[in-house]
Length: 371
Ligand SMILES: *Cc1c(COP(=O)(O)O)cnc(C)c1O
Image (tube, rainbow, N blue to C red; front, side, top):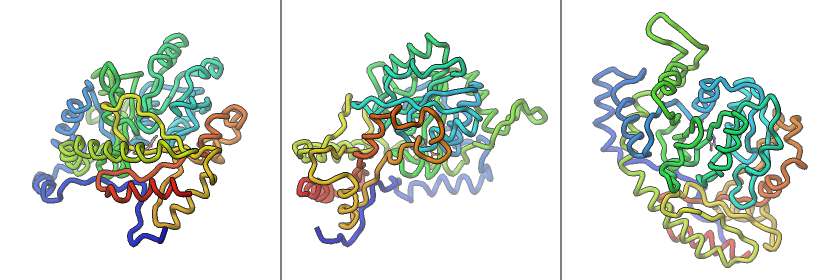
């Protein structure tokens, strides 16, 4: 394939029409309410709760600070069981709290934390489990909750990929003690930068709201070493507007997902990951696994696509456990993570976003089928 005129990246941020955002900007300019829980912050929290079908939400500057604060709010210490197959912020949030990550291998079907391997990793120091709904595919929520209950562990979901995802009982975000969202530009739902914690009750939300505001309670009292994690009015106003378009954006992603699947499922050596509940997925990523019976290895395909102007991403390679600040941990050893180690060598995330032309989807699929 010749080099394309315009390069295609794995994602392109979704934005509403600019004209529709201008009145909100004017309102912010006129009111001089820029942050610290202004009117857009309040409206966006309410609208998000309604859209997602959850009771309480605390908005944040970004998903990473939300993860750090979620752990702090539950007073998690010692060791936390988590997945090596994620974006590095998942484990970094543990280090920021002085917690030792304990990596457990993933399930080869879902690529989420393998519930059958969690118990063996629990020690007297374990205080929590932090799974990820990887690619927005629900983790084994029931099995993991049972383990958390049996061993009296907190359960915090990194739900950065799982905006709008539902299971039989409702929002996937209702599971565990807390769920954390990211609204980064590359995610399905974005506020440029942003994040949130889904909380089960008002008491928890109030504590989290204090922690994201330096630990302030009222004017003269500080109850904890909190951080500055507040979402500002610009991001909140944008989020409120983005909500109007999110269903359309997901519907468009779904069409692209189906087109890739149709063309790639018969290609020998290519495995597409299943969406267990099609109606309730968000199609944030389109990961494929380049298996041994494909004519070339993953990195060769990756390079050939790049040379042709298509830029897929190797999410998640390297594994978090391979980065210098983690690789010395006993649980980071490859022998402890055989499935994740293989998958990280096979995975490739293909371009998927609402504005992606269907002709490009066809082109990418044909290119992969033709190697
Ligand atoms: C994007 C992401 C984060 C971090 O979110 P930010 O809003 O970029 O800080 C955390 N975990 C996972 C799994 C992510 O994909």
